[in-house]
Length: 238
Image (tube, rainbow, N blue to C red):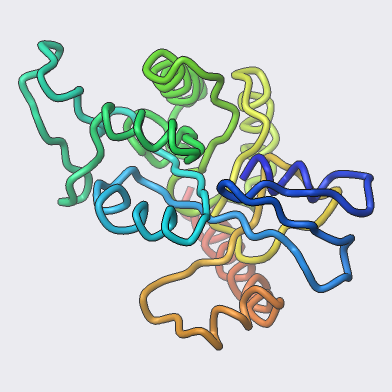
């Protein structure tokens, strides 16, 4: 993600992007060649066992966002008797595996501590989720953490919340925040409210190509309308 954003916001027309151990000459916007940032949320262990080997085989990197409370201790550690931790019924990574991913070039970002619905929390609690998760990853890996992924649906129509939340992100030391908003990121757009394209096992090659070319971006409109309706409904109930 950090490499992709650096390219996207560069004022240089052409530059070289490093992908794995290879270098790819990337042209300016409109040239038909653009980098894709591959992101994964939640820190599930099947990323390590299934996705990671495939990424390495084809020379790709990625960004993994982990909720630190669900990352298990390193094997043999006396810090916790729990060898495996699960989130929504799925086994999660341990810190030894996270460190191995990091050494291999996978960017590790924060996905809070407990993966809560942040919009339902008080501001001190939100601040703790941002700061404590960042500190834990930095202590475990010995590197700065500047990437964050918002858990659950991003409340884009709660402008009061979004504004304050971005202030807390900056204060905590984050430089980017990905969300559930559908679409592709463009130069000059806010790095603390990054849109993404969902990808799942139902995507074939043609659908994936269509998403990357922008044919999926229209879903942002109905998605936004639905969120706005839900927000107005919640206000009426209050």
